[in-house]
Image (cartoon, rainbow, N blue to C red):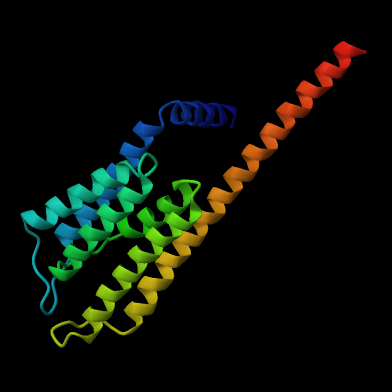
Length: 193
């Protein structure tokens, strides 16, 4: 048990020391699952088979997801644009999590200007929901009407979870700053006494 705990502690320390590497590894893992889901998906109806454009779109999303903490809003916009192209091109896929993760990252790692963050997130969610709605209404598609509610709900849920994480991180930072100030005041009072 102690060995596992020490190993976990070592991994945690490494991850904190190398956040960009963690982001790249995470994006690569999600990308690998996306590529596997894309290449093994069974096409139905009007869906397109896998081709180079689909792989390029996934590659762009991997790169954008790797930048999710450095440029969360740009990452979201790039991923949303690629997702729209992917959906409009009607590619079959068994795994598509980029847009959900990007919405979460935008709210969890976005700037302190929360209005700008939420405007960008709302625009992305409305865009994705609109594309799903067009897919439901299109006679060439076999998308169920529940897809509209599903797309909106899962993306809004990711945004809310991201906002909770952002707020928790902000509150912890405030508490740490308060503790540092209180400690400095105690030391000053001890020196004056």
